[in-house]
Length: 463
Ligand code: SF4
Image (cartoon, rainbow, N blue to C red; front, side, top):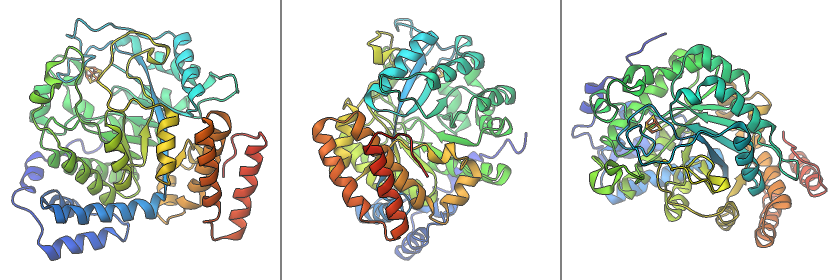
């Protein structure tokens, strides 16, 4: 284990004292951001102190530029599978917490996991996030079986999940190695808050999650266990959001310095009301993050860590999600259920209330209207372009050469196999337009060729 103490609480808070940039400092930082090489901790601290509408608009504009330069119009889609809501922890904001005695509990059997997976496949999903509370019933051996059953599941068209990410409690290096052997994609774990003093108030001592440092170092163990891609996150609303953003920057720097690769993704959940959980009600949230600030911090992370994926879930309302994709979000969940067995209409309790109830087809229809390319692509991961290799590929901008065509191929598959007639018609028109945007003739021909093959029934084509 290397440097465990990479969060200097006092230093990070002191960086936020009266630190708003002058106009010329702001312009210098934003011009630097447009070079797509990221920003320093000091730059980010200054941006976090920006309050004026006009200056926030400049940050959003820069984030939009960076997003379009690197990701183009692609937007990756996934859905969670909650395998269980049993939990030994007592996090005050969570519906799954141990003391929430009224919650109907359930841990899925392997057959039920397969049924949930088939329901996702029937919608058109190809990427799943396996997630559960922390419980001996959901230990690493259970997860190994769950991953196998999820990958093995098929719907009537023969489709299968092509990438499984997992969001699980911190574990040992040996257990991470077991997950790696099952070919997981990203390991995700939210620190919830990086403030060690406040952390203790929300995560009672005597529970596994009460150990701040064990959680803080879980990505170190994941990387030592061979996991290539890790995903960070906090739960916004617990402490000053500006502190959390600086801490995420520090965590990313630590991973880059010690393991040669920063986080693959950063997630942005805000506290949402949960059944039987008074703390989660809007009037009780200690540091609520308003929509304006939420948009600002997503934009800041987009320009500070331009090659890191940004994820938002169906916690957010459709109008908000539609805005956020312009300023930095590169992955969204869609048509999610947050209770175990939810896709099969099981009545077990959910972790939080959803803000977006649209079907996958409705989300995709919205994306097409905005000119976005819905992507179910898993090509990089399956070609071994992961971890530091992915970053090396992404940084010179080659991401466009692989990711845009691959996104188009998976989009075409969706349109052929699962889309409503209206979505299919709009989607095919968009694909036609997109094909014309390739300036290299040979690449354009290869893309057209693959799209044509998919129309004729071939599947799972990628560069
Ligand atoms: S946040 Fe996670 S660890 Fe905490 S109570 Fe909920 S499910 Fe359990």
